[in-house]
Image 1 (cartoon, rainbow, N blue to C red):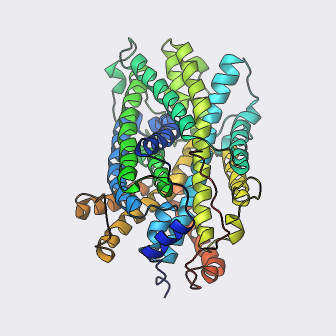
Image 2 (image 1 turned 30 degrees about the vertical axis):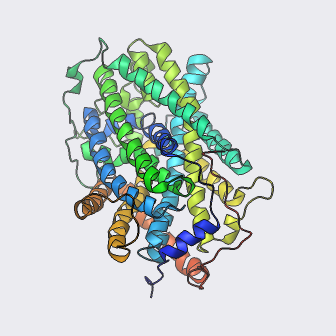
Image 3 (image 1 turned 90 degrees about the vertical axis):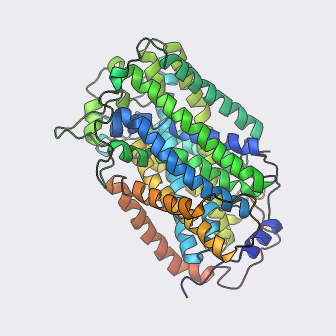
Length: 521
């Protein structure tokens, strides 16, 4: 039977114990890990793209995305604590719905993490070019090296986003040679980002330039722009849902967590709530000071974020009068506009310093998913072999880095975020289904954390993720089924016949090693 290969929970947990990572992460470290990934991925990068879709309604969009994330996090918290192993939604699906659906989830997660890493690379490039090169060194990078081609939603005269390519390849190289990011170093980066955003809030909300008039109209594109349009508050929520991938990354670290039954739920939900409040406050500060109205097309509908039409409109504005929706370094740009250039530059430096760690974490999440799929025989086993000196899965890391760099070179951040969301929303939906199935099939299994009112929270998660998916732009929606079809072709022509579970192999080879996670020494 196609759907008959369900990996027993006992086998998954036994395999993890036999080939496990040391459990060194506590609840606070997990929360910092989630905050570090969420804040870096979203607030520095997607504010402009979200405002172009929803205007001041960006605040409502953050709340909508946050609410859907809360119910998804509650599902994640139960299953991640119950099955504290690497592999995230892929492993959870394997233990409940079988191999083929687990493959589709793992394949979607590959899309999610790789494209998300590309998006953050592009976001980092904006701060590097605007703050480091322009503001501090007085260097203007040539257009053909500063952004993607205009036809792809880049900039006038653009050809390749060279800084984005360089940072993606640099982080790939660091991950390959085994340079680890200690929990203490990660805590420092989180402190830098939280301090920078706190300063932004304190300088914008009480500012003389802050005016409630700038929130009018609050919803220039409405609440619901229509399925496939990608605009309106819900369309913006579908885009910035990407910003919450951090709590998914926390679950991939469950195998390395002390007392996961207690600490994983704290890390997941704590980081999510903290970041949602920050998102809304920062959005209010940005819109209330310089405005956040989208640039409208001739039909009275906002130009699509990341489109050639929007790029052409933005090119007509002078740098000192650039709208929020056109800025590649939105938060630093806001502070410069209201007379805090020095602090704005410092915020740009904070993004410049901190975002590479987010790229590293996302690249690591991608390689970890591929590693576990390889460990199960669904991807080439050579991908889960480690370099004799570096002790890392260097082949899959290199391949991932090249793909990430290519996407970052030629696509704008808005398009990348929407594509990443397609995979993310599918994975979150499958987690909710897996939790409900496990309540039936493993009713007596120990659960230190139980999702409250699962009869309501589970269906809400499924409905919320499906609803946001259909509010992505049409081209982003089409990516997932096309990617999924490619994945199924690979599964039936290669993976199915090589599956360890299908061949009756449930034990791991003694000499296999697991790569060191880049979140602790």
